[in-house]
Every structure is written in C-alpha cells, then in structure tokens.
Amino acid sequence: MRKYVIMGVQGSGKGTQAVRLAEAYELEHISVGDIFRWNVQHHTKLGAQVRRIMERGELVGDDLVEAVVQRRLDEHDWNYGFVVDGFPRNAVQAEFFLESYDIDAVIYVDMPDEEVERRVLARRLCSNCGMDYNLIAHRPQEDDTCDVCGGELARRDDDNPEALAQRLADYHAKTAPVLELFERKEVIVRIDATGTKDDVFAATVSELHLP
Ligand code: AMP
Image 1 (tube, protein in one colour):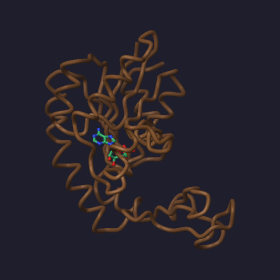
Image 2 (tube, rainbow, N blue to C red):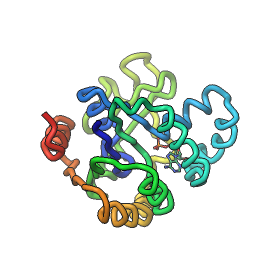
Image 3 (tube, rainbow, N blue to C red):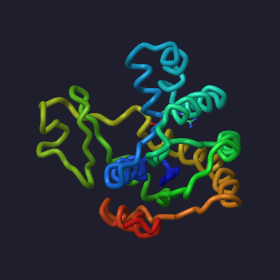
Image 4 (cartoon, rainbow, N blue to C red):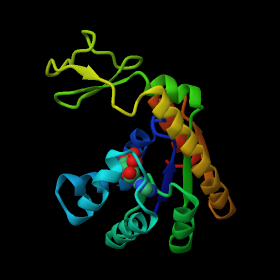
C-alpha cells in the first residue's frame, strides 16, 4: 500500500496536492487539522479541548495530537494507502511517528519564504460564505466582493505580514529537525512548489514513480 506523509509550510499548496494525490491514487487523506476542525464543529470533548488553542493559531499538545493520529491510523483499513497531512510538525511528533509506522516516502513541498509571502498576503476569504480568492491567481470579478454571494472579501486575521513572518520562523525552526530525523530512515522527495498546481502534481507523481 502507498503510505506517504506530506509536509510543507502553510500557503505552499500542500493541502491541495494532498487532496489531488489522494483522489488520483485512491489514498485516504488524513489531515490532522481537518480532524480537529470536525471535532470543534461537532462539539465533541476533543473539540472543546482544542478549540481555543486553534483559535489562537497555536499548536495542540503533542500527547493529544499523537493520540488522535494513533486512533485514526488504528481505524484505517490497511488494504488502502494514505497520505498524512499536517503531521508530524516537530521532532517529538516525528520520533513518535517513526517508532510506530513505516511509510514509503515523505513528500516535502518546498516553497521559498518570499513566494509564500506573496501568495498568502494575496489570499482573501468571503466573510459571508467562506469562498476563497487570491488576488494573484483567482481574482473576484469586482474588487473586494464575492462572485458567489456578493459578500465582502477580507483577509484572514492571521494573514498579515507580522503573523506570517512568525509562522514561517516557527515552521523552519520546528520542521528542519523533522526532516533531519526522517532523512535517516525514510525516502524524502523534495518538490519545487513554485510552479502551477499541475506542474507540482506532475513532479510529485514522477518523483514518487507513480503510474
Ligand atoms: P492545519 O489545518 O494543518 O493548519 O491545522 C489547524 C490547527 O490544528 C493548527 O493551527 C493546530 O492548532 C492544530 N494542529 C494540526 N496539526 C497539528 C500537529 N501536528 N501538531 C499540533 N497541532 C496541530
């Protein structure tokens, strides 16, 4: 079975590629952020534990994240492959993962900080229906107005230059050790994420030697 982990900074297009890969090769897309969001929306006990942490943009504690990943992978039917998205995010999580699971490859979606900044600062969300736009790649027909519902477009609160710089610094500090740990045991496939979605997908398929 094809078992992958996908890593990349927020804004690198990692989530999009994970979904595409999952669809094309019948892999289960296991996104830790999505599991948390589902729990918050459905008012579970886990949701209550993580809601405030997520609202502040902080990371959920390692024990809780590991328990969630373990439970999700225990539930998984191992006749199917998967792509784990958003985990591990630091060295402690990576060690836990390496001790417990064998994977085929780590897909590292690599984008220079300047490009992440350019893209993330162009992101807009409809404050009414949640539709997302990008002033570079997907402009609304009328400035600041949602094409679908006419709602006002706004930046996410944490998409400002200061918060983004903080996120990038955090990401590099925590992710470099994860890559080092993985490099000792797993195949790491680095994908240049600066091209179009199709280019990045084609490069991923080729690097992973997928049909
Ligand atoms: P994401 O959708 O990957 O951006 O995750 C949304 C939020 O879920 C993050 O801001 C964290 O609060 C939490 N989260 C997701 N994955 C992890 C992880 N591996 N470790 C800690 N917190 C996480």
